[in-house]
Image (tube, rainbow, N blue to C red; front, side, top):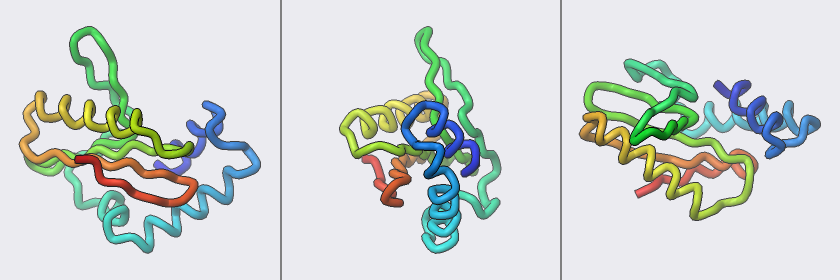
Length: 122
């Protein structure tokens, strides 16, 4: 999942190729040391969808990571740029789409990779 997210950021121009290895290593360290992110990768979720399309009203939406356990859904979107209100709006939309699908307990997070900041979205 880390390699895919970093490769996507390099491809889109959000991350320089020369920073790929450093960012990958930083993320692996962050996952291992942060209880929240560690829970996303510890295998405790029943299903994990990576860049899977959610279709709604003729549009396609593709969150970076959606994790499902029972009626709980957690959406995480990785960002390699600076914090933006648009990012929060995007995750809120993903959360609403998951509620429409039928998940009762939905939470959402933005993970800013450069500074390893995880921001919960309300």
